[in-house]
Image 1 (cartoon, rainbow, N blue to C red):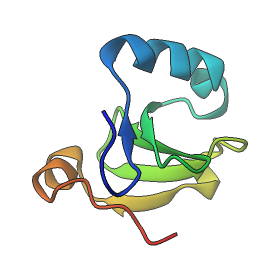
Image 2: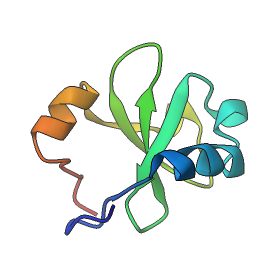
Image 3: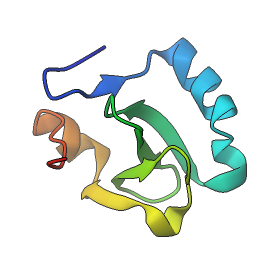
Length: 85
């Protein structure tokens, strides 16, 4: 699903493939890539805690993540806001 702000949310089939391709389990354990900004940054959710984050797809290091929402529910309710590029 693609939104006007450039956000791409992965389908359930794509989530598995993208997380394997990006090696999220290796580079960002405890996170799941659920989409991207159509510009090289992944949208990640924290699995064991809360929060929605963005990180460069070439990095995936949690230390490089920028939090864009305190929780997934708020991010969805607020209409999937994305930071300015």
